[in-house]
Image (spheres, protein in one colour):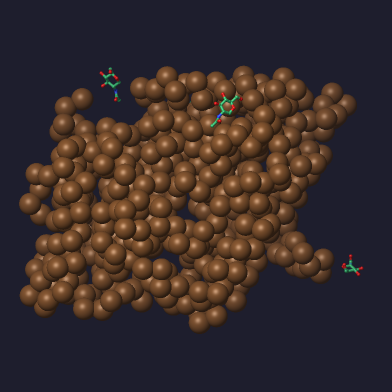
Length: 473
Ligand SMILES: *[C@@H]1O[C@H](CO)[C@@H](O)[C@H](O)[C@H]1NC(C)=O
Ligand SMILES: *[C@@H]1O[C@H](CO)[C@@H](O)[C@H](O)[C@H]1NC(C)=O
Ligand SMILES: *[C@@H]1O[C@H](CO)[C@@H](O)[C@H](O)[C@H]1NC(C)=O
Ligand SMILES: *[C@@H]1O[C@H](CO)[C@@H](O)[C@H](O)[C@H]1NC(C)=O
C-alpha cells in the first residue's frame, strides 16, 4: 500500500475522531474509534435478521416502589439451534446501532456460528434510546451507574432464559461479552450475578477505577516512541512545547489561533481554554494509539514531520465538515450540556487522562483540577474532587479492582492500547486467565481485521476454547 493510499485511510480515521470530539468537546472518549475498527473490518450487517425489542426495567432497582421504563435490546438468531448458548453482547457508552457490526463478523459472531448460539445486543441505560428519564439534567442522572446497569442486565438475562427455555433446552448457558467499559460490565456481571452468567469475555476493560489516569498519556507517548518513525517522539515534545510558548504571549496567541483555526470568540488567555486546547491536540495522537495499528503510528509521524502547519490533522478534513469553519475552544461551552459518560467518570471511575506524569511528551498543561472543574461545570458544585474520589473508592471496593475473586472470565487486552494498564494483565487463576496481545489496539480482538498477526489468531482460538470449555462444549 503506497503512502498516499494509507494517508487517505488515515485521514478518514482522523475525520471520524474529529466528528466525535468536535461534537461533544469531551476528552478522549472510548466510543468514537470503534467505528474505525468496524470500518476496517468492512462487513455490512443484514438489518432484516435483527429483531429490535424492549424490556421493562425499574428506574431504580434498589427501590421496590420505583416506576418503570423500557430498555432496548435486539436479538439475532441466525445461528441459533435449540439449547445453543446465548451470547449477550453488553452495550457500553453508546447507542445500540453502533454495535450492529458485531452481529455480522468478528469473534462473537464466529463463536455463535461454531456453537449454534443466539446473539443478543443490549443498550446501556442513559445511552442511545434507553433513557429511564427522557430529560437529561443533573437531578435526573442519579439512576445512572454501572450497578444499576448490571441490574438491568440481570433482569434481561432472566427474561431471556425463561423465553428460550423449553423441554429440549432446560439449562441454557449464557455468556456475557463486552469491550472497553462494557468489558468491565462483562466481568462484573459474572462477579455479582454468577448464578445467571456461566462465563464472561472481558475485552480491553479498564476494571480498575482511577482518579488521575496519568498512565494514559505515558502509554500514548510510549507507543509513538516504540512504533513511530525515528525522532517522532521528540518532534511531538517540541510541538507541544511550542504550543505552550505561543500561549504565553498575546502575539503568540494570535499566531496559534490562525494556525490552528481556533475561532475568534475563543478566549485563549483563559487557563481552562488552554487546558482544553492541549486536551484536543493530544486526542489526535491518542486516537492513533488507542485504535491504530503499529503501521498507523508511522503514517501519522510522516505527516507530522512534513507538515509545516500545526493543524496537519485538520487539513483536508475540516472542509468536509460544512458547519465547522473554525474550532471553538471554550471550556464552558464544551461542558455545559449534561453528558452520560462524563457523569459516570465524575461519579464512578475518574479515568482522567491528565498530563501529570513527567514521562510523556505533552507538557504539563492538563492538570487534574481541570477535570474536577469539568464535573462541577457540567453537573453543579456538589460534583467536586471528593465526589470523584469517593466514587472511585466505592467502585473499586464493590468490584475488586484488578484482583476480584472471580472465575470463568477471560481478560483480553492489546498492549498498544493505552487503557490496558488498568485491566487485569496477569492470570488470576486457571479459571480467570489474562491474555495480552502484542501490537494490538483497543478492542481489536473483537473484529476480523485484515492481515491478522499470528498472536492475534492464537488469542482468538484460545478465547473461543476457554469459553467453550466453561459452557461444557
Ligand atoms: C437478510 O436476512 C433475511 C432474514 O434472515 C434473509 O431472508 C435475507 O435473504 C437476508 N439478505 C441478505 C442480503 O443476505
Ligand atoms: C419493599 O421493600 C421493603 C424493605 O426492603 C419491604 O419492607 C416492603 O415490603 C417491600 N414492598 C414491596 C411492595 O415489595
Ligand atoms: C496464564 O496462563 C496460561 C496457561 O493457561 C499461560 O500460558 C500464560 O503464560 C499465563 N500468562 C501469564 C501472563 O502469566
Ligand atoms: C496485508 O499484507 C500483505 C502482505 O504483507 C500486503 O501486501 C497487503 O497490502 C496488506 N493489506 C493490508 C490491508 O494491510
